[in-house]
Image (cartoon, rainbow over all chains, first blue to last red; front, side, top):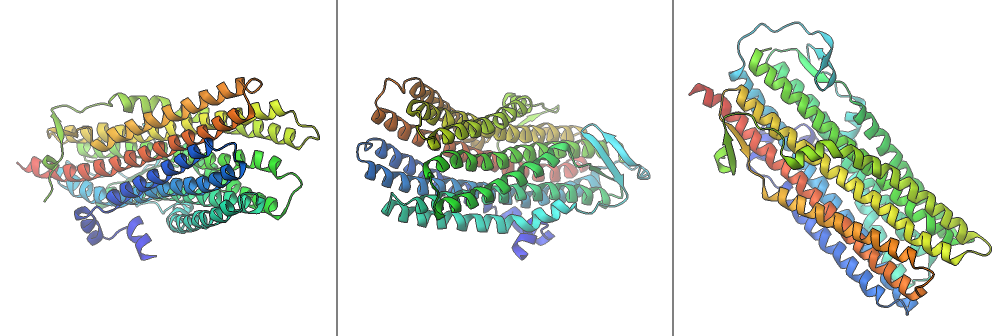
Length: 309
Length: 206
């Protein structure tokens, strides 16, 4: 828990230590490279399978191995993305310290105005308050949930990889095929949800950090109101996670025995990809929101530098 | 102690704007996201039609085979679109840092130092292009196979399907790899800006 708190709101000592040591970025890039190698290896397995289509059993065996390895490779690259996002999170707080220090010196002397409540900024509707606003409930959830989501997601993908070996040993087993696909895509959805929560934690950090800088200077705290892109981000992520859990449940139904498993597999494959697509679409909107919040903050810093208020 | 001079920078007297990829990112993230949001439900509907055909008492083999190619083709148009939208959104963030950071330096009356294009950005852009090409080539070839299901043997169709699955998935992996580098660039930019903003106060004192 302390590691999570250290990342989402590090102490001054931790911020200084992070400035000297940046392990997250190289660790993330190394993990991404390992994931890429795993996925390309899986592609090679599939190409070997393509040369063995006359031998149905051999093809099914290679497809099972390729599926497990490929999905694990994707999970590794997505975990790498999460590790790099942790690096961004800690760097954001270093930026807060640096802006706070610089503005204290550079800000022209001016009488701080009274907070105006609701205001309209260039980047949208904002609030102006005397103190830093409390974190939104979704920010609290994001800070608490990103680590469990990543952990459970990784375990589900690895469990699916183990089941894929059983599937390769008995390629005709519908149950093994269903368990592998359901487990691994549940894991993928949870890892993407973990990434989404990390992006939510970055948004929370921007909000808290921006407030901390303005409050330290004795100025009214301007905060961007939750943009529509952020609301859509949360909705898409929830839809995607629910679809990810539902696809797992439906694969369990197939594993328990259905009349025509081929027909089930035909639409469950695209359905599980749909669940990931919804979370990925939410991630696009989270990144767009981060861009908007940063733009708002740069405008605010510039305004403080020029006017002192 | 690290200073902004330890980074590869460009120095100008005025604030800088967005570069070409960042401008593209600002304009194109939404159209590509819309394309993705349309493609995935379309693929899901097509897969439902295929599943219904497979469950029928006498399935039409050609129809099943054509849909077997169209579903992954549409689905991976969606993946190419959503990963492109993510890449554009990252480029958009990098643009905000570039423009906003330079405007702050200009407002502080200091020389404007901007990070030169880092190596990670080059890997990000190259991977994005390679991933996109791999996926789109696979999509086009799926359409070629779909157009030939009545003339090609079942074995040929199966061979192509397996090979193209490998190409598609390798394309997705390369895309994700590039996105990792895009985000790693943000870490680098944050490090640079934290140091540079810290220097502004001492430059004013001089």
